[in-house]
Length: 328
Ligand SMILES: C[S@@+](CC[C@H](N)C(=O)[O-])C[C@H]1O[C@@H](n2cnc3c(N)ncnc32)[C@H](O)[C@@H]1O
Image: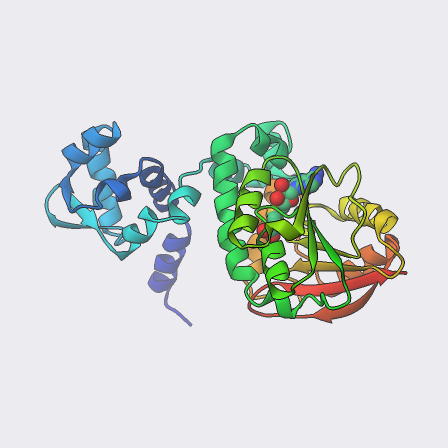
C-alpha cells in the first residue's frame, strides 16, 4: 500500500484544475505555433498573441513544470516534445475549444439528474449548437477524423460487404468508414447520409480516396427518415450519442427501409471488448448528449425491440467492434 504522502501526491495530480485550462488557453492563443522558429521572451510572445505579458509569463513558467515548455533563461520559453505535438493538427484544433470545459463544469447536473449537462449550459442539443458554431464544428470534425482514423484501422475485416451491392452509412460524418469500405471492394456502391454540416468535408475525403464516383450523398435527419435503396446499413460511433429509446426509434426507422435480406452493422467500442478508455468516452457522451456506451446484451435488447435480431458479433479490443443484425 502507498504511504499517505504518495497518495496525496497522486491525488493532487487528479485534482489539478490549472493544467487542463492552461493547455486550452495556450492552444487557443496559438502559442506553440508562435514558438516554431525558436525560443522567445514572454513579452514578445504576449505581443504577438495579444496577451498580458506578466500573466502570460506566469502561466508559461507554470507549464515548464509540466514539461509543456522549456525555459533556458528566465522569462524565455521554447518548445518541448509536448508543445511540438500541441502545435500540430489535430491537437491544435482539438484543445483550442472551450465548449467541453464549460459543459463539464456542470457535470454535477448530469450526475444528479441523469440529463446531459450540455442542454443545461447551451439550452439546446449538441448537434444543433454545432450547426450554428463554425469553430466548434471544425473542432468536432477534427476530433472525429482523428478518432475515426485510429478506430477504423482494419474495419474492412469486420464488415462483410461480399453480399452487398450498396452500403448506406448513416451519420457518416467525414466519410472515413465509407472510403475504407469502398476502397476495399471494387463495384460496391456507397450512400453517405448525415446532416448538412459535414457534407463538404465528406465529399472532399471520398474524392481524395478515389471512390467519390461510386458514392451518392443524401442530406437528412435520422429523426425523420432514413434513405432507402441500400442492402447494408452501417452506423459507426453514432448510436452511442443517444439514449436507448432514441436508438430504438432510429433502428425502427432503419427497419422500415431495409430490404428483407438486408443487414445492419453497428460499429461501436462495445463494453464487452473495448479498452478501459471507453469508460471516459461513456461519461463524455452522457454529459454532452445523454448517450452511452453499450454491451452486446444492451444492443441485443434494443435490436429486438426495433425488429432486428443480432446475427453476429465481432469483438475487437483495439478499435471498433462490429455487431451485425438482420430483420427479425
Ligand atoms: C460521432 S459522429 C460519427 C461520424 C462517423 N460515423 C464516424 O464514425 O466518423 C456522429 C455523426 O452523427 C451525425 N448526426 C447527428 N445527428 C444526426 C441526425 N439527426 N441525422 C443524421 N446524422 C446525424 C453527426 O453530424 C455526426 O456526423
